[in-house]
Image (cartoon, rainbow, N blue to C red; front, side):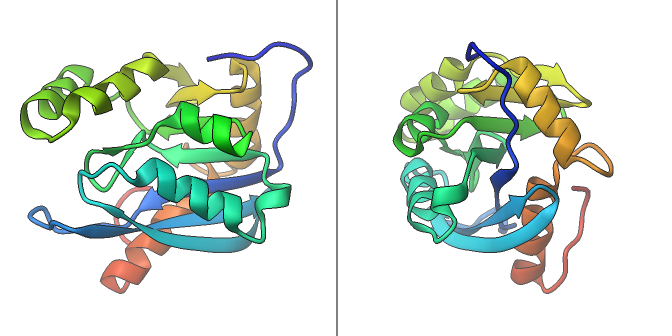
Length: 193
């Protein structure tokens, strides 16, 4: 979903990722948000969402909107469109309620057919969750990753990725959120970011 007008730059970004959890885990999963001013980490937010639940949108709005950083935030960045398994984020609602663009980032293109089947066949409320995924449209390749966007143009998204990715392919707000999430959950960060 694009916007029109002059190209904006986004220097104050919150990036969210979920903490690792065992495959059989049921219940709440911790999430981490990192607040960046350009490439400088300014703060960390934390909350919880239900595994395969429906509260990720509400929790992200609460965390970003009620934090001491809220007045300065210019963009919300997500590591994928779902947290804690299939707790799908309504990125359009996040955009509307916070008044901030939302940029969903993935290292590789998702397997949409597999995601659709899992949601429709195994997850309670899966039809609604799949509708939220479809509402965002296909992920588009951009600057070495795949993105979905709400409230910003493809040019703004590309410029944001370039400005926030000094190393590798994952933007710093998401890379650092991932590292913190792993570190606080398992005692040390691990895995590819």
